[in-house]
Length: 290
Image 1 (tube, rainbow, N blue to C red):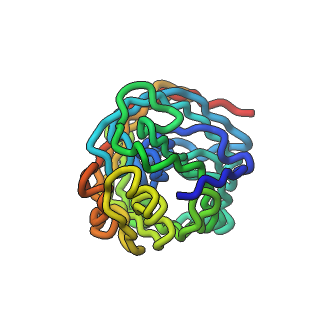
Image 2: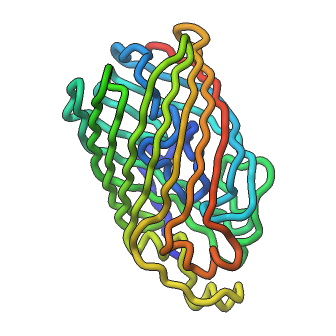
Image 3: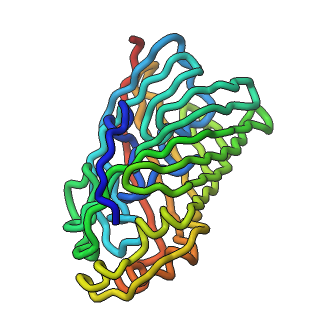
């Protein structure tokens, strides 16, 4: 595994809301993930610069492919300029270069948090964890730069289809693609969004996060595994958002995912992990104008 460090412009910083890594360490929030970035239609479009800060907690799979669980505290920071520029961990740092009622598209950069071999945890883990990665070595932070395209359709734009393609740098240099479809609506003051999602990646990504090289095999007793590129995972995610007033919201998110055949064939997953993963969390946030 590469141990090269990388400086991720202002991105690697913040932390993550839901959402942020509301997915296990080593897994970036997929497009349409149940994060605050996947809010259903309803809240007003930001006017000028706005910032949202908050805190939450998440319980779920300790790392992507783990049998163990962990509890994390997740800070929530996001910044928007109108409906043009956005920054948050689920959505990354991006620009809606194409911005119409039906279409959005533009450049995007996202962080992917590292994986700690000692406890399987992310920087936000506070309880639980996993010892299954001992001997595998740590994985540092990676950046992923690319582009996205999003199409809203249906009555009131309730359906959203989104695709992202990103090139990794830092801890991995693979190509990663996210696909999602979600339906959003409201019931009284409750906003909701739910839908399927999938992630695909190239060989470099697969071997960084699921592969076992000769040195790792000698340290762990696992068989050498070199998974090829293909489907990383597929699943279903959802979000419930309850505005408390014009500035404050409480959000509940959750998701279930299944590893694809390529990563699941690795000796790391077959002997020390499992294909199924889940996460469930809640976040309180406060939004204000800058």
